[in-house]
Length: 290
Image (cartoon, rainbow, N blue to C red; front, side, top):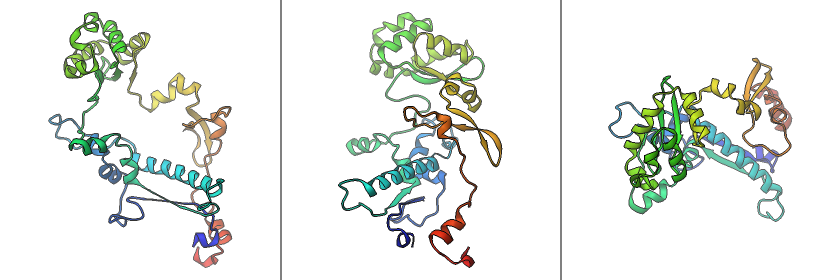
């Protein structure tokens, strides 16, 4: 119906499983997208570590991803509609088909070729990385956690010297990343013994001074108060007509010369604000159908 009114219209359809296939009519929410798309399996605990079910990642990642892919698809379709040389699609409206499961499945990195090569099925690995060491999240004296990525050869040396184990920096048993991965548990024990002696922020400052990549696990209050977030206006204060003065994330994509606060200058209309216009002005539907 919409394309009869405007053949150039670009429409995005977001669903659980997509517009075709045997599951197209199944209901789904974000949690189902995580489960079917493969990520919930990976956010579980390593084998034998816990009897608890694999936790969700903490946000509605399926919904967020599908929304971003829909926006990208809409932009691509709009460009194609008027692109020079796109004779087949030029001037023609499109329907963008995005779903929760495929959106999550797109994040599965190299797992498909891994499985195709030798039947491998990637398993949960907790806070560590199976292919890099030392890279993990370590407990600190104040009950907080510090993520440390010391897995390159040079960074590993700096890390060991900073935490008081300079001999390990030159120990042939830890010379390469492969060597360190084979002795991951030993290294993690040494690093955790050091982080447990300091509050997370103090440990972070020590390692940053030695150019070791690290970060405390930020909660939302940490993000709001962080000077880098503030300097880049990654956290903006805006006025919302419903709730008043509030915080809003700055744009993740930035174009040169644009001020982040100018990009997020409007929180959008109320839900349903344009329903009457769409139904009765654009589609010419009778008022009794509202």
